[in-house]
Amino acid sequence: MFKKILPCLTLIFVSGLHFAHAQNNIGTLDKVKASGSIALAYRESSIPFSYLGGEGQPIGFGWEICNKIVDQVKKSTGRADLKISTQSVTSQNRIPLLINGTIDIECGSTTNNSERAKQVDFAINYFYTGTRFLVKTDSGIKSVADLKGKKVVSTTGTTNFQILRKLNVDQNIGFDLIAAKDHAESTLLVIQGRADAFGMDDILLYGNRASALNPSELNVVGDSIQVEPYAIMIRKEDPTFKKLVDDTLATMMKNGEFETLYKKWFQSPIPPKGINLNAPMSKELRDNLKALSDKPAT
Image (cartoon, rainbow, N blue to C red; front, side):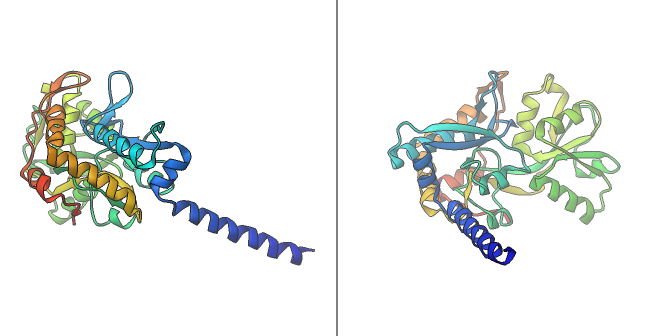
């Protein structure tokens, strides 16, 4: 009896694997059209890219761009009734949730690099940043050299954590690198004095400083350790959807809409406290408004 059952179970198992593989290979636009819903991922504290506003809903520069992309998805699929579901993600789970289909597009502050490109695809780069440090204004810390014997926190699952770990070893600086679950917790550790510096992309540091209870007690210091591009993340081997996302960004970059949106989120008062980040557009980003490159960091 067992010999008869075993082939049947094997057949069912293999059929299940084929079905799962087929499901994973369905293009995003086909998936969205069939389900009538698209899942947008956001970060809770990646100011000003995507974060929770005063009413607990996601807002931000990347979030608005993703909603522009949704408008084009509606046109492409013929689903004017398309529903948007939202999903909070972290540095650790954003890639797995994209790969397994829980989310369809990530609207945060993800670095486009070669290692991640083995698992996911990236749209046209839409920001460039470098790793620097958030410290207390009276800390006396001005550069990497001042971190010897200090506690440095960075958010787990980020490229910055890896960069800082390598920097510490290569230059024998001698700081104690600790991990926090997200940018908000990293910032809080500095404010509470449980860490001396928070190493992260400088624009995120400006955002977290702006959202702190007393922004004046915090300062962003040090030269950029490494300049990296941010890009919207999508699933691999989905050229139709990537083209739609890239075309949406390219159109915005060419017609001035992108620059208007940049001024809104980086050079004007933003929610929830109306603080202006005063972050001018970098040369790298201005150049990419013409180049429209999705080239990753090394």
